Image (tube, rainbow, N blue to C red; front, side):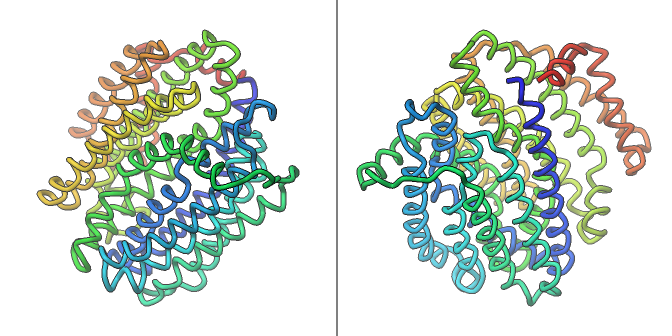
Length: 464
């Protein structure tokens, strides 16, 4: 794992730049289209995200793992993965059309349906190949190019609520260009010799456990906007807009989670095969640091949520502060869950991951519909956080049966420190933005002093 820090740093910088552009695009859309217009964009991307997960069905993760192995040990070639993704993408595009029309009617026909065309350029993307090969520069550049094109087109073309139809086309164009960049940078020639319907179904069977698990895991954040959007135009779609705006802030912060997805999986796969004892020690250190970092972020956002929403989206979105405060703990749970989920996948225990996410998906369904019915926007935020916490508990239960890590002390310190800082902020006039850095420093200093993490942990990360 010696190259992890360098790879993580590269991905962090590239992904930070890409997400920054995506974030500026969100700010522009939210301002130009208003809550209702941006609510339609939020629901449209949620529909597309579900379609993309079904069109991938775990093939990308399978491809990453296969490319990380020596060529003679691969079960599937790069050509098998590429062809399977393309065929499945076409199938899902055709199948999604009548489903969107049936659920969303006129709005689906005039707006949401256009998002689905991004499935095809996504199927052409070779991110899985570069991740497995640990060639991080090409796909980091491709992500930045996609974000830059999307931002440039939207910023120059979308100038009001009546230009909403250009949003899905802009995104599809950006995704297509990024896919061709990766194809152009590819050094290896893909061979499709021997590919057949049998190979396609074999790849689907191997990947489906991961893919379905991923779909259920993503339901935590994707299902609530869809349920709000199904309520039609008016207040429900405006609430979807506020939810989407708050979630976008969380997704920007979750660049860290993307680093784990990109670097952690192939790295832990190699280390687990070579030295399991060292893999367990490395996982333990990373988990402690992720807990402290995640709870620090959650604490800062909880205290300063309203001011953050007002700063980013203007005062018209300031009423989304309580929503952002709740959703900040979704970010915390997602970071912790990444360790357990990718730990299970990287060590070859996909079925345990699948079982955990199936139960987690059921929990999402049980929480989302009644909470949104009872509490609307607040219920949607609570459903997202509650579902992710359930998923963390389930993946940890599966993870601990395979890997022994100690983190309860760090978790207890982080929880107590977060509660103490938030309680103190409730009685002190420190919610203004100038106090935001002080909140973060206070949390980190307290957790350091109480022993949640150590100087050796920081040095370990630097050395890697």
